[in-house]
Image (cartoon, rainbow, N blue to C red; front, side, top):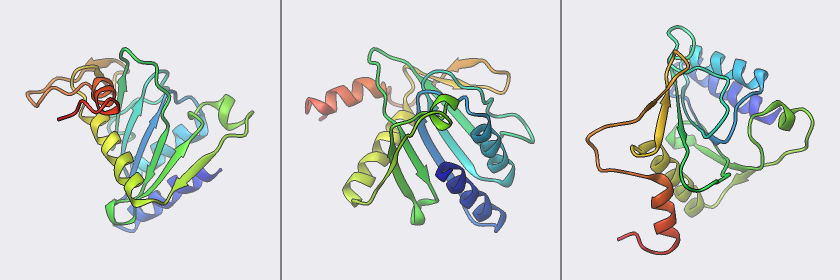
Length: 174
């Protein structure tokens, strides 16, 4: 249960009155134990930002329960499967890349791996990628407390995360 342990660490940090953070990029979230732990973390004051592409069984923004959780979905032209787990505030942040979504079939019936990232350049790159996904205002949808998704719209520079990563891969970013 390393994921649950890492969430517990952030809960303890928040309860001690210190900044606590969880960032997650996965395709699906259905595992009830992890969902319950994320709700507990939100109640404790942990800031949680998630990009969950598909199935998501957690409602964000519910007062008194998940108001510290923001969930976005980005579905675009490309079927991508990146999994990134981020734990801790900036000065103590830990990064992991993983093989699994937070689905019961993965967490109970399979052996899945989350590998820590130690290289500072790679940590910076993962953070940049996560930030781009969070800033997507073209394809992103925000999950609201009522369970519905609404298009993310703002007056900021247009960002389509998938197109950005495509252009970056082919060195087309200015």
